[in-house]
Image (cartoon, rainbow over all chains, first blue to last red; front, side, top):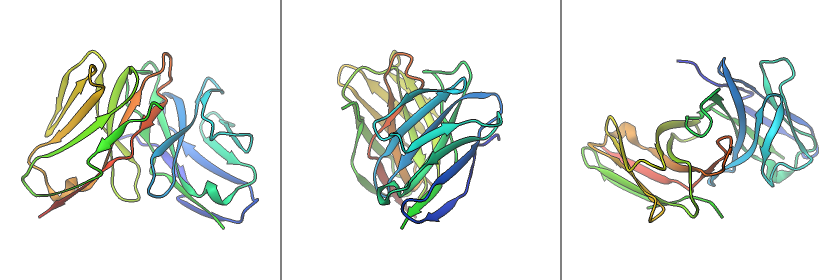
Length: 116
Length: 113
């Protein structure tokens, strides 16, 4: 079964460092998302991305965050200067083209970010 | 806010029993989805019910949606130890919302052999 692949599975970084989380979407999926889950809390929407641009972003997704799809395959989330409160599990999700508002999101296994 | 809220927060049952989890939300939705998460793992989509549907079945899962009460329930019949996980409802409400899902806090289900 096709799956969304995320790397790294776990990253430990020092406060103030830049972090890049990577996602390989399911092929022919054209809508991409990042969600995060702070330990023990809700899954929160960060950003949606379609046609090489951000469709929507939440209040969490401030200037420290950016997304891109540099090579037409990987979908990345960059945090420029990490803060302690960025420690969370980050999930990439993708959606089949044509399934907006009617389809299921396919989630990756997540990248756990620990900021020290 | 548009958040879905589940209850109970935690549910402990014996294998073979049925498990019912409820979800409430605040504004009109396009659809409501249920996801499952094993500890430390990713989210797995279970079932989607559209705003014009009232009930949906998938295997041992039964989902109902009451848009007048802005609530949904997930029933797992004949539960198994492998059903132990957290279950989340997620609402998709925006026009052209690009599936910006708003998740509830989840119900932690423990099924004992």
